[in-house]
Amino acid sequence: QVQLVESGGGSVQAGGSLRLSCVASAYTYSMAWFRRTPGPGKEREGVAHIEGSGRTSYADSVKGRFTISKENAENTLYLQMNSLKPEDSAMYYCAAFPGWVRNGLLDDVYRYWGQGTQVTVSS
Image (cartoon, rainbow, N blue to C red; front, side):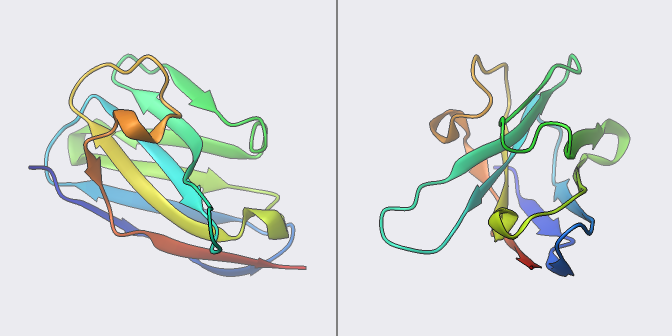
């Protein structure tokens, strides 16, 4: 069992930046960030994914604004979020899987999940 603990969320004005962190209790090859906004029927949206080879993928909505990175020595995943928009407001979750995943932005491939950290962007 791998525990994931996110931090770094908060409130910021549009155009601002935040950096999310996720500390894992053990190394996992594939890690990702997802987000979910409140409301009925809302599903988790894949934001960014990274794997041990360094391969990354991003949702179109965040390309050019968000950067995912991983510090393997510390089992820590980061998400640098710049040029934030109100529509980026959501609960952000860290996810992990021990092996390779074909599509890193699909939530059902991940085995481990953190509790989430809230990001609120005001206009």
